[in-house]
Image (cartoon, rainbow, N blue to C red; front, side):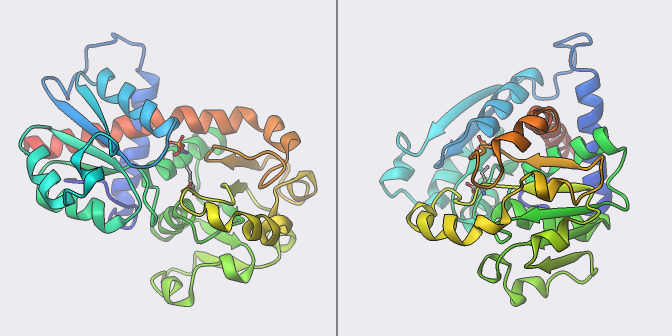
Length: 305
Ligand code: CP
Ligand code: NVA
């Protein structure tokens, strides 16, 4: 693996390998700390043009735990923020850093960086996908349910957002059932859905119908970063797609409630349901660290080949 840009780019075997390695790294995190250093003598950069708590901290800790150093680069400080092209930024940083982790709007920007820099590039969220999140979610499902095989996963709310799209590619590759439950205007376009040939990805406008017998109820914010101007209409249209106790009661008794965080209580999820399922939701957040360490390890191996 040279880069980690999207779930779409990965095979089922690569996805399963990353989840399994994340699991192993988690189990061994406190065994001989400092003894496994595949990133020794390396410095990885983080370019974030959008806010982050979990992604930034988990990558900074992950790189350090694997023996590397990190440099956080905000677009407020880089010449990128004053109009220097991403291609020039990539060619400069590629000669100095050993890898880069980018959070920005356009998927093209991250792909161009990967192409022009020649160093391993990780997508830390863009408008199209949030692949790091889905790896952590899959690890959490494996830990909590044993496997995602045969699972019915419901993604409720804005089902055309980055996190939903990464879920769609995970279902396509791994074979579980994913039902996107949202209003017509927040379902992926027919054109986008054409790319999913397996029949594993379905859409449903009735959340109650979707939630019946679900193994996982998943939601994300209704107003993603960059969509703030649409906040009022989004909050109104998405109201019927809240994960509340009545919806949870329709799912299997042992169903997981998951959220990538940050959560807006009593919007996409009630405070009551979030607190009742906090164990799963914060385990998901912790798993960002372990799953992303797996990505870093595999990319470091790719460099040395
Ligand atoms: N879930 C997630 O990516 O969180 P941050 O925006 O805090 O990184
Ligand atoms: N869909 C959300 C995910 C945040 C982690 C956003 O893009 O803001």
